[in-house]
Image 1 (cartoon, one colour):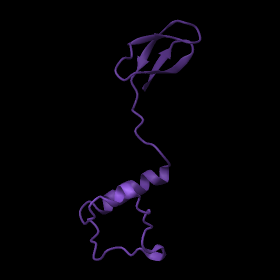
Image 2 (spheres, rainbow, N blue to C red; image 1 turned 135 degrees about the vertical axis):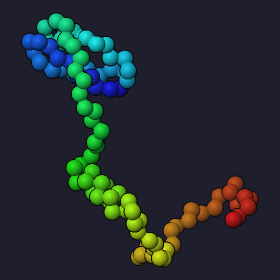
Image 3 (tube, rainbow, N blue to C red; image 1 turned 180 degrees about the horizontal axis):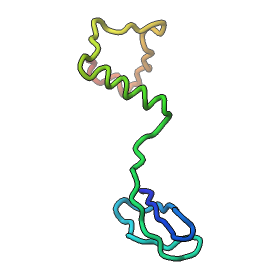
Image 4 (cartoon, rainbow, N blue to C red; image 1 turned 120 degrees about the horizontal axis):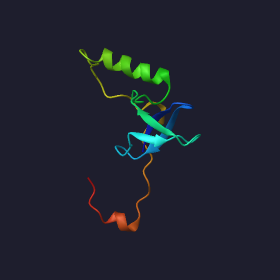
Length: 97
């Protein structure tokens, strides 16, 4: 679903949610019922917090020309090995890697 904006001469701008690409050029105003014309506006492409958005942009810019180089495998830390679920009889017959 997409949000489309319409402008009524008396009551101003209102929104309608319609399937993408199905919005008519005019719609009835929910307040007075008169014909309102569709308004072309900028799409809303940003989601989440402003800080997360700016951090993603900065990270992309930093790695644009010189991406970070990995010299070793990251350590597992205090966790150690991951726990393995016990084998069930049905899985015990499968070949192991």
